[in-house]
Length: 437
Image (cartoon, rainbow, N blue to C red):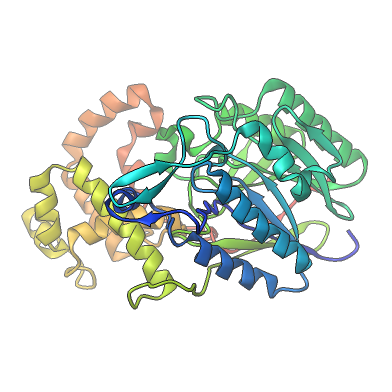
């Protein structure tokens, strides 16, 4: 690499074509449970791509899957038109597809009134040729069975684009013959003196304690996959799917490390994309950006406020499903000061007037925003720590039961406190040292 090289990373665009109906009771019911904005996707994506296009010195954009909402053929047509427009603006788009991009489990729909009307879907086996101009045709090597490929992005830098649909059902990972091919590609890149990094749709690594408990929050057999990649010399991978900003590391028994850089959803909170710059032979600079504004009726809200409102509304709805109604009603009225008094806990004046429900929503939102702020020494951390101590007897009973099934739940204090504070604070911006061979 003779000079710095940069690319943009955009993930989970979930485009829903502007020709489709998107109003009425049926859409609102679906929208209420969704982190991402769907009706707004044409406006959001156009605004985001326009921002990226202004950077005339960076001509590569990587997109690791979930291109459209739910497999609508016309959504692919509309999004591909936008990719060709980026080509006209001097950009090269490299993408992989993922499970939202094809129609397998029922027909995709549009929304009119209280009805969901079926629309034409995209078969999975047509995706590769449909997007052939965005990474596949110019590939150094291609694993056609899985729709994976290797691309030469610049002198000395290669991309290993890995589709991880697996069996399109429960297995979300890398097949054995796909892994053999990938390891060979890593070896060939190193022998050529090139640095190679990867992108997949699903996260390689669980990025938060709770993500160990969520099936599709990481690749199936993630520890085996991470170990094989890291020990082969692959030390950097970019991922999406969970709509979160996170940077996670894993070190093998042999001492080899791989870093998973996960990026938030382009069309929902946290609305994010990254610019990645290989500064020199051993340093990668990663910076995060958001879409400043988009042309849509946001009811007087800024783009950031709109995205957060949508996210918080979803969490509040989910709390209503999970938390008993009487408890929910109390949380919506109870301040942290009053809650502290009930439990004989002193709460710092700086947070005493916050509603308990707002604190719960923020804890969840912060997991996805990244750089969780409530570290040791902050008033909120101390309040939660005191709360956990107050229920220590009950928690010990839970730890014995839950810990037998999942070791990560054997220490609930650590499990919970790790989710509200991140000492490293590098989920948004960081510099990484990479291994060139």
